[in-house]
Length: 160
Image 1 (cartoon, one colour):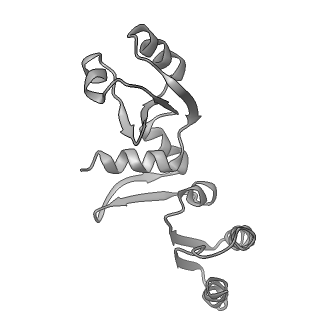
Image 2: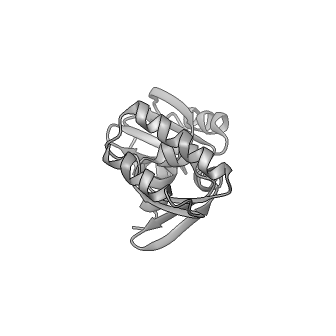
């Protein structure tokens, strides 16, 4: 209720630009849907909306332009698709006993995430063929379109 009240107060004076910090924090699913629909209608009136969020799927769905900031520095900016394309078109995720170091010696760049290995690629089919040709064991394989969260993680890991 508090977030909805703050949003109502923010647009009460019909401003041309609205700044929102974590606008859907603590909202239930239905409230979030109503909020984003209201915000889209507000933007259709020619209004500018700037919001910060840790809910990257919401940013992906609702933002025209995204700025990724890491340690106070802008490290990427553009449309959601521009940000995701910096990393790769597809994300390959699988379990393997091959270490990142062993894969690197075979010319394959693996990132480890808990029990899974991750490869970001523009050509998933070719990458899978390469893994098999180098006898890398693959279990529990998934291939998905790279999402904004994967792009964010990849971009910020490179900055360490």
